[in-house]
Image (cartoon, rainbow over all chains, first blue to last red; front, side):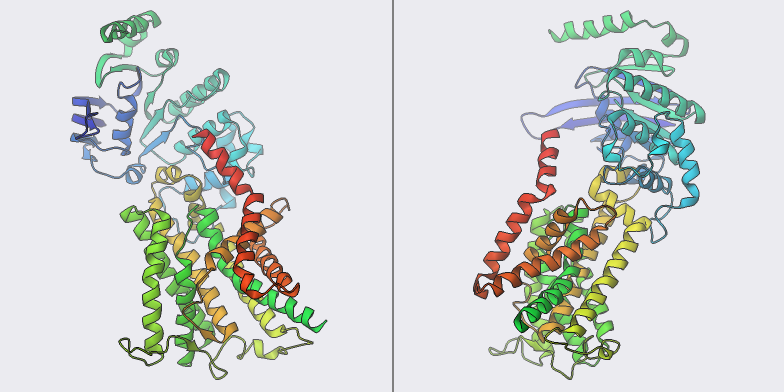
Length: 257
Length: 314
């Protein structure tokens, strides 16, 4: 479904700080996959997501989505079929708009944003039932500005919003990292519920090794722009936290710190 | 006492007249967070467009509509410079308003039948009694012109135009395009995630803001009786100050629309200027008073605190 072929990505080209992150990098995802990516800082996780979502373009190589070359397609055009939830709970919603207005906007993703009525009252019941799946009482606060919600509530709303239109790929960019442990737990449960409901293809970057092990059927570990561990299905289920920690330590020793 | 009434009359007229400009600023500055300097040029463009068409005998309402489109066109250019060429907001406004100095001047000279190369070409377009304005045509003509020094007709007519544009703005902000515009100012990334080009909404917002500014310009010409090249000076401060005064004074009032706050802010701002004049401050100090008022409003406005908060998070 998603294919990154022979990717090269260089930062600060032509300066003394020039760094080659990806060189001949390949990555493939099948339809219906739930892939978790872990890795140390600077391993290229976020850059990988940026290349997929179109927030950054590769210097060489191609990005294919369902066989179609989207390497140079702009971010907003890819958003038709790719949904993304960011680490920052503020990024996925609009603070100055109410919950209802946020949802009404997101609900219309595939249409034209013309002079029609912005918030269609007929859809409110559907929005309410979507909010009920979050189990946070958001359904009773639909006319409240999103800016006044807590981080966990905003992230739940961002998840629901990303899933409202029929996206084909969901990108989770460390979406629990800015939350307290309890909210993080709740958001991960909600994530799984939403993903399972539609059997949505999902790519999750996380710093939480436990989440990476507990959720999804494929686990990828990245280091300095390469994939150093890629476990799928049964193989992944047999992987233990200690194995991951050992691998992490090996990397650190190699780097000399 | 008569002078008190006529002063009240003047600040109400001017308040409603500039309220439309301030509502435009609400769109560009508050919603889009874009400090738009283009208005210095587009206010005059609106005035010139109106004067040109009205002198040709065209209905003043159609001339005002044409002014709206002229302003929107130049506002869209500012937007395109910013979105497509990635020029900073302040510079975009400076570029377009500078270019408009020439455009407005050339059009004015041509309207007056002069030669652009001529040394003594006329640059001020008079709008005499024979030229149709919204004040000397129906429906405003049914109203008495003046009651005890109170310019009833002018106040009602300008209030009606301000109200009309307020209603149009409120309606627009409730549409899908309007919601999207508000979303662009709040979180551009969110709009990208909705598979929409945030740049398009920005351009629409700037077109709207400058269209409104141009309508103000058309009213100013009808009120003053001519379109002169110096008309646009100080419009940024008038628009912004009215907006910020209105929003900071009325922010705690429940269920009040921002457009209403802005109209009230505009009237309060003009009232302060009128009060200064009544206290005997010479008009030469007007711009100084404007700047002081504006600074005071800024200090008390939420906006500054809000931005401090933003920086702290970044």
